[in-house]
Length: 381
Image 1 (cartoon, one colour):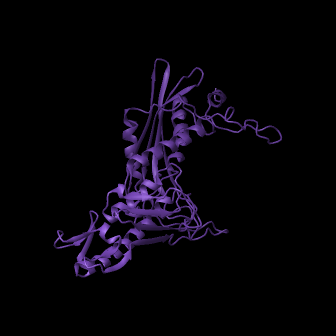
Image 2: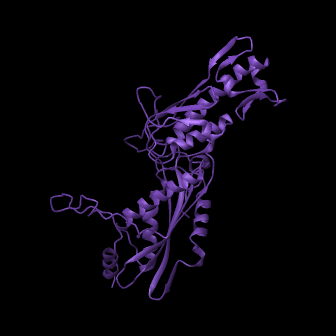
Image 3: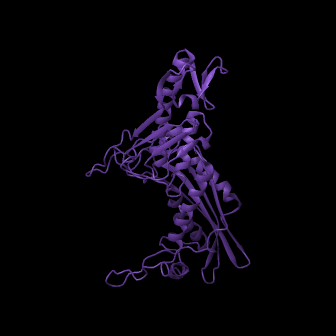
């Protein structure tokens, strides 16, 4: 009843379509399959209560209307390519994704793309920020543009070598070749630093591709109405949690968690799944136990990890199940939307819904520690 559909608008009156939100219905149906929803939401066995809860989530990120990224691709004499941009690798796999995007567009093996890991803002092309789940989107589009630029220059040099028009050429497999006769071509390594003819004459020069991308059609939020288009998408997903609760002391174990996200085209399912699992852990941790304790003067009483109760090893779910629905984004690189922060969002609601089902009363206070559940149930007796 409540999921957002194409043709609706966001709370800020952004027009929504399949490209900028995805398919909530498919996310919900797949989540129900993975959590075995139809087998029952609540069962009692051996004095313990097993229950399930589902949440739907969606989000955009407030992005600068001129947020942008740039990228360089520099070809070397062995036919390999150096990729240089200012996107920061935090462990989320950005550099791998960017290498895949460049390799796909150039028709190269990924191991031929050497990504510069360190960032030097004095020399690197501009990158807005590594925030807002936007790095694959922004830097990916810049890398894609740089690869297209490099392909144009490869064809220009190869057309001189092969004595043909540029439009007769295609790029792939580390070569530039004639479309109608692929056996005739020239390798990247022979074009990378310009082409040298047998008589010693040389043409063109090193292949360097440059690409850039800037956000399009975004607007600031109107301070009076709250209307505007703050981000390029409002991606949708569903999450679920199954718990086993002891009705005597209201302690519980998280058995299974599920995330299904429509992130557009998923460029690297392995890294995307791990990113979702990290987010699921974070969401469960602040839903289950994390909280700040203040004294009467508003001073935090638990400022250390020893006293700030994060979800610890052994308290995690037995299963983190992740799947994706892929509704491509028109603007994204190969149809991708950002996914970085999405694994966190619906976990607290899904956990609260599962525990609410277990104790058969609404739980709407975090963190969901046994004492809070006990007080909520006791207040109804």
